[in-house]
Image (cartoon, rainbow, N blue to C red; front, side, top):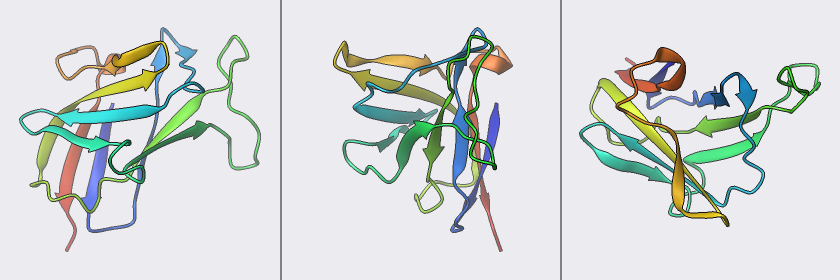
Length: 127
């Protein structure tokens, strides 16, 4: 998955994470972190909650978006446009924390090579 971050704009990036096609339930999540290759952790919802938010997924008509099992998908919204990050492509690791995973659980890792299990952010200057 590749997401383009238009620096200095108001375009958040919304990502739906799946595991083997099934929805990942973030209802117990208390914190998320985003690490980018070569930069370390650039977003931590415990430090700045506006950088990463998560909520149930709905279509434009307000209907829930569900997986094949009927479980509703969760979306994670990344608001990275105002971060001081040089234009380039960065591989991402997203870690989710909840009461059962106090050290965090990796949802996607920057070293994963399968496109359906990887996440990259392309930071682009907008003139």
